[in-house]
Length: 286
Image 1 (spheres, helix red, strand yellow):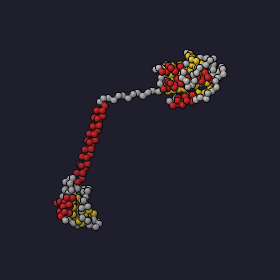
Image 2 (tube, helix red, strand yellow):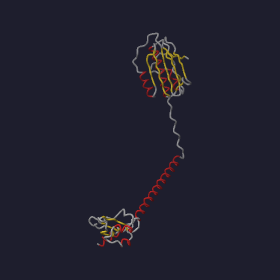
Image 3 (cartoon, one colour):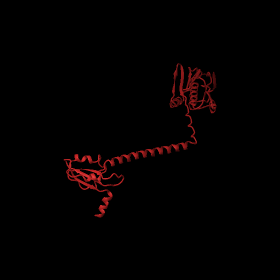
Image 4 (cartoon, helix red, strand yellow):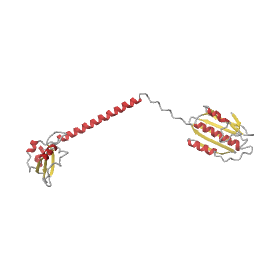
């Protein structure tokens, strides 16, 4: 398969007439540049669909072929040029090879066409090589296929209501969990408080000098966890004082019994620490 077009005025940066087809949805491979006296370029497509391109990667392939053909026409006039295209699902490989020139070539313009193409191919994750090949020159590039991401599905008309229901369900779940934790905490509070109650009758039968071992059977299994030490009188020097609730009432300030023991674990003092309301009434009376 062969294709030719005049090379007059077509440079590396000039798209030329061959690029007009690029405006359509399927742009053909650029025809081979041909300076006076040059031979036509030979095109060898491999792989179905290798001759038609579209998109960013395919425009880059178009530029690579155009630049290579322009350089061959300029620097190797009269040399045969072969363009090979290999199209695969993963990408496309293009190879442009020319043999030795049969006539004098044009001096180098010092451009950066191949360097720019190398950078463009690298930015897409491809590979680019250009250099002497046998008696001529070869340009080869592999450009991976670029697949556009599928558009995000349009939101469902019921999506806002679904999200609102989800938020309500999460809120109700959090509230229920909070109630469970609150109930568990209150249950533990009630358990510990009621296990620290010393009845007034048991307190009345306690006598100073009694060892703790004799008193233990009538004492609660727990001590008050929030003893009113700020309202209690000063303890005896060196004594170990323990507080017990005088009532099982919850969520209110009640009286407490304080029992103080010496180093031999004998009861040395017993006091009634009034509740907060009783203490305030006592202060008012004073």
